[in-house]
Every structure is written in C-alpha cells, then in structure tokens.
Image (tube, rainbow over all chains, first blue to last red; front, side, top):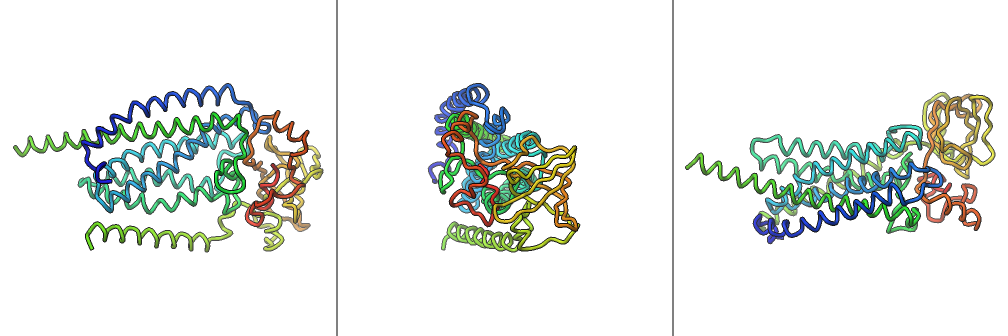
Length: 241
Length: 163
C-alpha cells in the first residue's frame, strides 16, 4: 500500500496504465454502441425501449461501484493519511455523480413508456436519489474548508457514513415491494441471469467501457491534482523566498 | 498502540456501530418502506375503507372486463385476490398475467377503486423469437404456474412469478 502513496511512483504507474484504459474504453464503447443500437434484437415485451437498459444498467452499476471505491479510498485516507487516497476519492466523486444522474434520467425515460410514470417514490428509486445527494454533499464538503486537509477529513467521514446506502440500494428490490424490477444479473444466488445472450454482449461491453472511463478519468484527475499541489508548493516557496 | 492502529480501530468500530444502527432502523421501519401491499398483505392486515394505499400483484387471467373507459380486473398473488375498478388510460404493458401496481382505496363492497395503474415490469429480457420458442416448447412460465422456486414469496408477493 505504501508504495503507491508516493506521488512520483504513482504518476509513473498512472502514465503506464492510461493509454491502455483509453484503448479499452474506445474499443468496448464501439462494440457496445453498435451491438446495443443496431445488432441486438428488440425485447419481446418492451420492443426497442430495451436499448435504454444498455446505458441505464451499466451506469447504475458504476454509480454504486464508484461510491464504494470512494469509500475505500476515504477509509485508507482516514486511517493511514495517504495523500493519493484522498486525491483518488476527490477525483471519483464527480464521475460517480455523473453516472448517478445518467442512471436516474435514463430510468425516468424508460419508466414513462413502460410503467406509465416518470418517477415513483419506491425504495430503489428513492435510495438512488439519496446516493446522488451523497455525491453532491461529498463534493461540497470537500471544497468547503480553507484548510484543505480538514475538508478531506470531513468529506472522507461523510463518504464512509454514506456507504450504508449502497447495500440498501442493491437489496431494496429484494427486501421490500418496489415498482422497480429485481436484478436481472445475479451471479450469486439461484435466479442467475434473466437476460438473453444476444442482449448480454452490449450490456457487458458498455459496462466495461464505463469502468475503463472511470479508471481513465480518475487517473487523469489524480494527475491533475498532483500537478496542482506542486504548483501550490512552488507558489508558496516563491512568496516566502 | 500506534496512532495508525488506534485510528484503524476507531474508524472500524464506528462503521460497525453505524451498520448495526442502520439495520435496526430499517427493521423498525418495516412495512412503511413497502411500495405496495399484495392481496395477502391486505388479508393479514386489513386497511380501513377509504384509506389510500397501493395494491400490487398480477392481473388475473381472464378477469379483465372493459366497458368504455372503465375497466374491471382482479389483482392476485396466487393466494388471495382483490377486485379492482379503474377509469382511465392503462399503460402499454397492461394485460392479463402482467404485474401491476395500482393506487386507490377500498370501497364498501371490498372493491379496490384505483386512481391510477402502473405496469410492473419483470427482470426478464429476451428477443421475441426466444419468447415464442419458449412458448412453443412449453418452457414458458405464465403467472398461473406459481412463483419460481426460491423466490421470496412472502416478501415479493407473487409479482416475480409472471415471467
């Protein structure tokens, strides 16, 4: 763990990963879009509307995944005070918030024709909206202090406390009656995968593209933050010298 | 104990306490988090006449009766049933065997008078050809076959069963 805490070493690793993550993102996005929009068949009930799923489901997965990554980074920052962990958490928040917005809007666009309502206050939709507010709260708190470290600490605590919402979102459809359907892709458990193979290709390709996008933006975000920190130190040295 | 260790225990203990508190809270909130009642929930805990709530389940096969704008149907969870009357536009996915969530109130005769009807979609996605061949080969599970094995019937009603 400590090996990655050194910004210089981290930059070397990040610069090595970046071209690969960009390549994976572009390739899988191309495959996902072509399959999702053209090659995959319409659904037997939903017709062409099923194509919204290829954005909605991967975006929702990312909303939960990015928050979990942010919470882990916050934990590492709070306990071991690794500066790079703080940067990773800060760089994750806007990406996660964006995926949450995508999930909520595509869900609404699907809900109107399928359910007959843009929005309902069931457990799944409500907990997802709370997730968006957690992301926004994290960003606001992280930037609210003149002393950057105090902002990092407060925001990291919020990220950890807010993590209780993640299992609630995931299992809301199993624990309570909701209008939202239960999960279609369940690697563990007896229900298995309730999506036809021809529709899984675009789904997983888009999921991979979103993951690669997250890795790319996070690494670039950390790189930017390290550069900004260097610039701050230099300016400070100039003023004092 | 080093400061790092102390912080580690402190943060971990805090998270554990928080998790326990959340679990207790969700347990205590219980039914208030349900988006709808199934006909069996209704049989167990009757709702006062005229009180607004949501009723969810499957549209019973052969129960839909349309007269002008008014439609009558029966919502079932394969155990209990509730007759529903509704006037208005139905969602595209509404049909017999399909899951629905309706909002309204019970009238004196025990009929649920719905103010709106939402279609509940299931988690199954497949192309039309696959659905047709499943029906041809007899592997198709319509609602009447009962919930699939392992479905948490108590928690979900039989709403998962209409795939």
